Length: 230
Image (cartoon, rainbow, N blue to C red):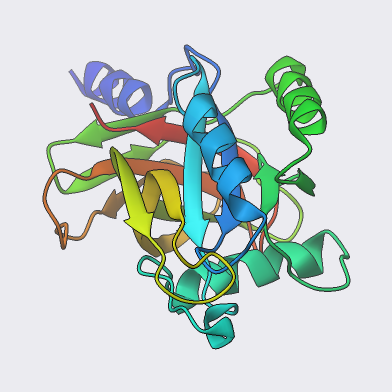
């Protein structure tokens, strides 16, 4: 009886190998006040329809001084981009910018380069931890290798609908700017130390949002795993 109980405990504590490769995460940093961002937004909307891709739009706020306050921008989105700027050793943040799997970046108008980076990310060897959503308020992350510097678990909630905004001031005055998969909430759930860990998901602040959870190297590092809640 004691041996059976011990075996059961060991089996419960042993994670199952990841059954599928996680989606390639493509993040677009954009702004409604950026004259060259409209085309990048439209390109991201097309990427959002591809199989095996998690495309996310992060509107930033540092162009608001040009006369139009972006209706979706949040300071935490700008902070996320700045973490990438430091990690990728760029001189400064800019828009439109695309970051692929937290590892490589390109200008948002460089569609061919972005496609190439996505293909490379899809082919790269991966051994992600298992991820499972338990109900509406919990996500479990299994065991795996932690990158140097540590890793973090992030929750991202985004609006999957296509949304058009008419810009009334600034460089894009009178233009309609297309959006898709606009991030509405982002929250760090906690560190991940390579052991199976359960994380509590906060209640959504808006209805009809999609929830994704990302396991990522600390301070804007490479994305190790990502999962969408059905």
